[in-house]
Length: 253
Image 1 (cartoon, one colour):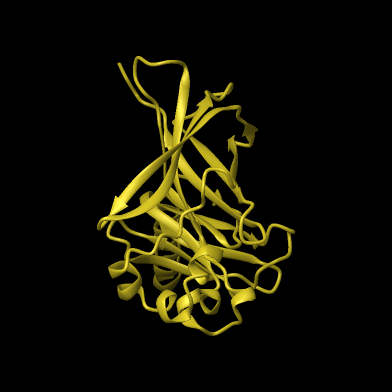
Image 2 (cartoon, rainbow, N blue to C red):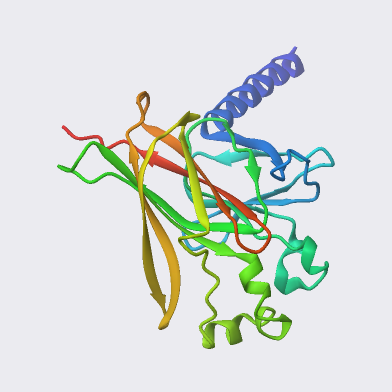
């Protein structure tokens, strides 16, 4: 009888602990593909903390699917997806097979998330969405496209050496006459009212970023909205890139 009671108590405690853990964690899952919807296997999908250190990591299977269970609820700096051997500085594949990364920024992990990622030879970095208080009824998206084709044009001796590339101020920007964008907010396509090039100067070297003026989403539900921006660089044989940003609606009184 005592053993039966003890087993019952342990079972109840286990159920309670499981429920508590489940209430404090979520699962991030999705599919990694190229822009032709072909799955990318063995892709590293990593959740990053505010100092860009690893919090969680998973790898996509042969069909491109990945799953990261037991992610502690909260806000994370970013998620990136990349098949490691494809990165240029690894020098493990031919230049035609090299790729840059997919990024999701300001990730709000308050419930189970599905983040599908597509990546190619154009990387959109540092993406941010914000609204100007008191301004016109638009929302702004800032992003910095980086061209793999332009990087490779400098030659292996330069692009494989990060420090040397930074010292020589290598410019891997996508130029205004070559770049075009599409933006969605929670899968709602947004009208782009204007695209303004912005010259960033990192260590004295120029990098081209862009500020997009967008119509506000028609539907605003919940505490945040997931923006997805896709870019196409017509230079270097055509390059594509995609990015995600979790935008929190202001909670003003």
